Structure formats: structure tokens, C-alpha cells
Image (cartoon, rainbow, N blue to C red; front, side, top):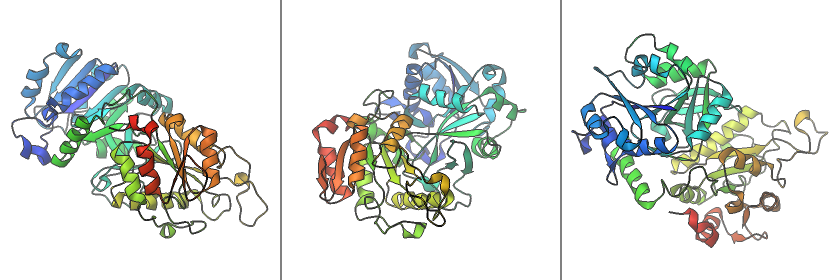
Length: 428
């Protein structure tokens, strides 16, 4: 497989750290981030690498040569003038026309199961698939919105008008089919986000692969420091990225936000005290956080899909304001009882996803490659605990419900989980 690394930018926001070193060569714990990228690519079977270089490109070429010393083959494309984040692809038409290829930014630290990402891209059969994840800084990131089939419906740059949105950002990893090369008939400065990905989204040809795997950009001195801290703590490469991960599942109402009956509008959603701090503690340890919630308001006809999406966007916005995020939200729209005015008949049924059934947890585990036997479910009802036991998870209850761990709040439960002996090997 072939990977293209865009390593030609000047890195103006981070130039204060080293003006004579290109941004991809900035050291992280003694090793350039670009070298760390190539190590991951080699491990994942990407042995043919194209490096697009420009500003101080000679420093990069002197370090890597033809790539043989690093177990790969490297081809260099030298930009004689800045071509933006995608213009150099016009120079690679003959090289990339045979098969799907990976395009990545040269300033990101990552440890990702690329085979799983590629399989998803091929399954969707689109022109492009982007790697998305929740971000600690969504305000200055590209926000990606997608539908139930993972098709991107909106691609929102930081300087565009952005209504209430979910916290899903473009991480800088992209799979493309060769069909994308027709978008580059001439060599010119091209912005990948605005001139390639946004139009593909408008055409329905762009998909989003959301993941909890580690990806962090080096765009600012603060993020560079954070990445180095994660490396030193063993967070980045603490285990096999292909191995299932332990996660924490959370109920929504009464666990994260106040229980006020049926929440039917965003303004009714108010975080419980300490909830954001609890979730941030899990985020800081890079433990996937998955919300699993029964939402019979859909079956009752009190909220439609768009309305529930807005409620969850409000939840994620409140968490973002406190530096926290969730990996994803899985919900059951069904309710078994029928015969009420305004209900949605097709959603009035017995299903395998409504808690205490384990369907939501099983679906999340399949989507995100999770190890349920090492995961916990935190909730405030017996149905939460039963769903967890049926899925094979540990249980943590808010209140006096019988569970493996009992706490007075979400924060209390999370603190106890993080101290649990069986969970300690997942922590840095």
C-alpha cells in the first residue's frame, strides 16, 4: 500500500520553537514526528511512501534518504512554490492511479489500526473517507457531520457559520480512491478541505470513520507539549492498536445530565455537577466513553431524529466547554407499548437494543473494537446494570442499586473504576 505525507508546510503557528527545522521534523521525546509516522506506516504495511516537501525540505531528505534505513521506500515530490494542502496531488496522477491510497498531514502523531480504517473505506465505496474523532479544541477545527450511514452531510471550517454541532473533527488521515485524481487537472495551489473534501461531501461521496484511536496534531506549541507528555506516559503506544480496548459506557439521563422526565428540547439538558470532570478524567487516559441511552421520545412522536440530534449536540457542546468529550452516542428509539396518540407505529416494538437488552453495548463494541469483559457500564437504574451484565461488562451504579461498584455520582463512580485492579493495566 502507498501513503502520501504532506510535509511541505511552514508551520507558522509553531515556528517559534525552531525556525530552521521543518514542522514534521520537530522532535517528540527525541525522535521527529515524521519518523514516528513512518514507523506506524511500516508496521501497518505501507512500505511505499511519497513525501511532499517544500519549506526546508532538504532537512527531511537528508534525514530519511531513500527510506531503506527505515524499512520503506520513499519518493520525494518537491514543491517549487507552496501548493496548499492538496495541490501536489496533481503531480502524482501516474503514481497513484492504480489503487486506494492514504493521505496524511505531516504534523500529526498517531497510532491507528489502518487496516480497519481501510476496510471501512472500501466497504463504503465512496471517493474518500476521513478519520474523525472528538476533539479537545473543536472551535478551531473542521467539524464533520455525518448521517446514520456515515456519509458526510456537512464539512464546516472554523471560519464558517456553525450552528449547534456534534463534536466530530477531521483528524488529518484520509483514504482516497484513484477517482479523486480527476479533481486535479492542473498543478495549482489547492486547499484540501475547501476545494476537495467539502465538494465531495456535497456530492455524497465522502464518508467519516469515527474512532477513539490516538491522533493528535502538532499545530501549536501547547499541542506539541501535550503529545510529548502522552508519549512519555506511554499513552500513545501502550498496546496493540488492533487489540480490543476497554471502555466506559454511560447512561445519559440521571447519569450525565439531570433527570427531568423526557428531554424533548436542547434547552432542557443540564449537566449534573461533576459529570464533565468525570468524563474528562477518562478522556485524559484515552479510555473510550460511549453513551448508551433509551430514547422512547422518538417512538412517542415527541421528538424526531433531527430533534434528538440537536439534544445530543447540546450535550456535546456543554462537555466541550468543560474540556471533555464522548466517543459516540448510541440510542434506542423503540418502545414496546402502543396505542397512544402521536406515536410512530414502526418504532413501537420489542427490540434487542432497549435496555435492559444489551444491544446498544454490543453494537458499540462491534463498531469500536471494544473488549466488553474489561469495560464498565455506569448508570442509575437496574435496566442499566442488567444490560451491562448481559453484555459481559462490569457494573457501576449511582445510588444504592446492586452493582460491582456503587457511588454517589458519576465522578465518584469513575474515580472508583480508575482505581479498580482489573482496570489498572489500561492506564498509563
